Image (cartoon, rainbow, N blue to C red):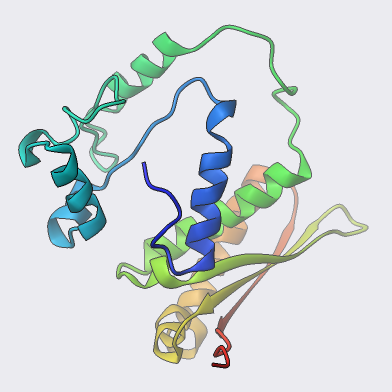
Length: 206
């Protein structure tokens, strides 16, 4: 697993730090590795880590210390998913719920809203651009009619990256917003007014 060193963008750093801070809360941790992406654009940090541990490339994850099992999974074709789910069920610890299953706190809802929007962005942007764009929840309000007003911003390092995310006449970010809004409405069982804004990061004064 990686620390937050080497991640220049705040959004990525926050996600990694949040993951590390949550480690002690769970009985089991899963590390997911995109083999397809690694073959096309290898991450030099991962390669150096593997070499330092002395693992052969063909068996790099099988032989890494600290891992109990590894699974080859294809989310697209569903291959290996049943084996992974069964393994997780076998490892599950029976105990009372920390919270009522039907209860969804506001913090959980905020996290879900960010995850859904980012998922839709990844569906529409198939380049490396999503990984350099900062994603923030700017405003969250429950309106008098019970609906939610959610405002999120994407902050791109460059104008060219902003243009790609926005699309021609706002078509791409518009489609992302529509799809995310529909899914959030389905999850939260209420109307959602989702507003997305894409802007360029301010240049830091030297």
